[in-house]
Every structure is written in structure tokens, then in C-alpha cells.
Image (tube, rainbow, N blue to C red; front, side, top):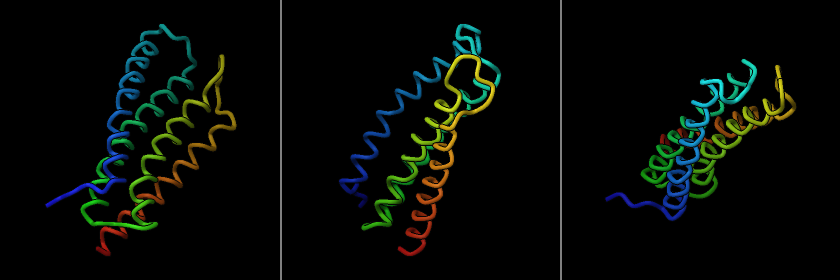
Amino acid sequence: MFEFTDAGRILAGIALLSIVTIEVGGWFLTKIVRGAVPMTPFQQAFARAGHAHAGVLVTLGLVGILYADLARLDGLVGWLSRSCVLAAAILMSGGFFAASAGKDRHRPNAAIALVWVGALSLATGVVSLGAGVLAS
């Protein structure tokens, strides 16, 4: 019989609640594409990328929590498996939004580094999860 770990249950609950913020972001995107929010084409592209990364990575993070709990991963591997993909959702989407912030921006600012830190977090999470599942 499947039982959540405490960490898995708490992280899954937080991730599920965070989906409301992704919905609000989708509503904001509809304002952007209707022209109600003035943005450069670069900013529009980064807004779409930030929104898409948030949705996909939160979903992947929820699936990862299930796999980590099913494989009974614990210790460092369990912690990395459950948290790093969700951290990547925050870092990567936040990086896209922050890197394009400002009036009439046409290229990313230094906050683009958050996207790369998020990519490292994503890689850490999926490698830990994949190795842990294979080893279980």
C-alpha cells in the first residue's frame, strides 16, 4: 500500500496550491497577447517561457514526489529527488520573468543567471530521482 512520506505530502500540498499562481499567470498572459500590457516581443517571449516552465516543472515535480515516495528514497537522494525539480520551477520561471523586467527591454538582464541555476537544479533533481528509482 502506498503512503506518502511527510516530506512528500508537504511538498505535494504546497506544489498543488502553487498551481493557482500559475493560473493567474495564464490570465496575465491573455492580457499580454491582447495588447493590454505593453511589452516588447522579447518580453512577450520570456513571459510565455516563464509561464510554460512553471506549469511543466510543477507537474514534473509532483510526479517526481510520487516516484521518490514509491521508491522509498531517503537521505540526501530523497531530499534532492523531492525538492530540486520544484526549486527549478521557481528558479527558471522566475529567471525568465526577472530577466525581462523593465520598460522596453529587448535583451535579458543579469537575472538570466537564475534560469541556468534552475537548469542545474532540474538536472540534479532528475538525476537523483532516476538513479534512486533504478537503485531501489
